[in-house]
Image 1 (cartoon, rainbow, N blue to C red):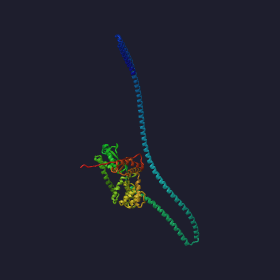
Image 2: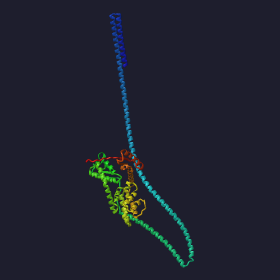
Image 3: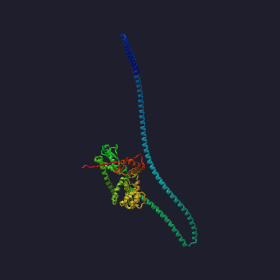
Length: 566
């Protein structure tokens, strides 16, 4: 369209130029030839007419061009509107398709999330089932081990009986031969006696009577021995029954949680503190887990170590009574309770010795005896178990006329090594022997420590009574739970592995063994070394332990700078 307009303008310019040129030519010729004035006017008039016609033609062409341009513009607008409408329609269609696709994707995501939740629930159920099956397998394994042991014993007994039967059979064959030879001798003897005198026959008869009397005496002696053995077994059962009847203590089983009652429910918020700093400080200093749930006016303390639970319980009760609960006060109270706990443990050991009438025990052993209260053996409280063994052994010794005081002493100290075996490592019998030798305990006590685990033979009758009392105390219905003890030993092993690393000041297994918190000395361990320490500990736990799920290793390095304004 713009090209046509330019063409029209170009034609008008050419016409104007041509007319101008023609006029100039005519004027020039007129000047040369001196034409008359009338011709010049006519020429000018014709030129004007030509110009007017050219202008009119140019205006006509221009109007036609304008109409064409407007027509093309209108068509272009209509085409643009049509294209825009189609584009809008396609955009709406694409938008609708995208919306439908988005809804489909959201629906797929919801379905996937539901499937994932179902899978997680299924995995948790399978994990619980595996744990239950593992417990069943462990019990079956123990039962199979016992049965295998019984079978081996039965095989040994059967072999012994078979050997005895073979020996008896061979002795019977020998006796048959002897009887045959005796019959032959008797026949010869009768033949000889027939030719004997009366005195000789009397002597022979007396000799025979003497031999028969000896055989009868042997039979009577054997019968008396069997009766005595049966009587002794009856008397032993009577003594044990009498001792058990005279002593009927309650069975003490230690679990892994302790509850503390609160004056009101508002104390839970104060125990937690701002952003949880109070509860974090308390758990870090005591090595326990504080469980604050929806139970009204109750806080639960969870830890596998009874001593930690007791320290945490007393510290929390003091903080609740005092009302001031903040990190500095928590640290002060926990340190105070730990110092007082040693005196309490020593006093508990002294009271135990006084209760059993053992006044000559070295006072240095009081602390270790009292510490047995915070140790468990298959969930049975070791101090109460030791007291029970001491009482049973003493009562049986009194019934049998033995040294009852020595029996009580050996019974009380037979498990003394368990008070620190978890700290030092090694067998509790070896540690117990070292402790008792250090504090001058007599030889029967040392013999009882080793003999009750069959590490050496029993050398004293009082020690035999201690071994029997130990078996009786452990065999009471409900006294021991092996699965809990296995769990506690796993947590103790976890802590011992962590404490074997250099620079570790303390370690606490929490969250049922799913987390171990490690406090390191900031002077020995840097931040970079603490990072590497966490990886090394995790690797060693993976190599040396078997456990369900995973264990979170948390290394805590804290530096404090204290100064006083005077």
